[in-house]
Each structure stands twice: as C-alpha cells, then as structure tokens.
Image (cartoon, rainbow, N blue to C red; front, side, top):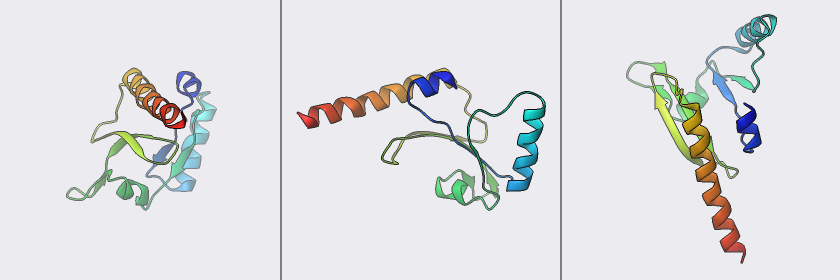
Length: 111
C-alpha cells in the first residue's frame, strides 16, 4: 500500500456484497487487527462490474478485475479474469511506466 501511495496511486476495491454485509466483513477484519487500508465499495447490483465488463454474461457471475485509471478517468491498463490478479510488483512498475509516459507527453506539449 505504501509503495502505491508513494507513487501517487490510490487503490479502490469494489465488492459484490451489500453495504450491511460489507460493513460486517470490514468489522471482522478490524477486530482481527487487519484493517483494509483502502476504500471498499458495495455493488450488490453489479452495475460497476457490468460497466467495466467484469461480468461473465454466459455464466452470470462477476469476475475479478484490476484496472489502472488515470487522472482523466481513462483506463490505461486492465486485467480481467476468473482469478484475482496477484502480480503486485508488476502492477506498480507498469503503472509508474504508463503514468510517466503521460508526464513526459504533458511536459513536451507545454513547451
């Protein structure tokens, strides 16, 4: 988490649980001394999952999605799968690379 924040990146997670279910789960984590260090949003209607195409229409199930969204709201990188994306070091490195390209372009455009 610290490495992402130091890179200027924020993490937000979206859950399929309802707000009450999510609050109960978060309280359980906090009781165990493991608070989740980023916002966790409830989406039991799966609207966000469908909007980001992280929903299997054939199987009728949500999938796991990891997205890098830039400051303009554009998706710069994504991984959608039945399995969670776990290559955290790769994700941080790739996010820095992609966003550094944005910085270089904006500096060239400003000259």
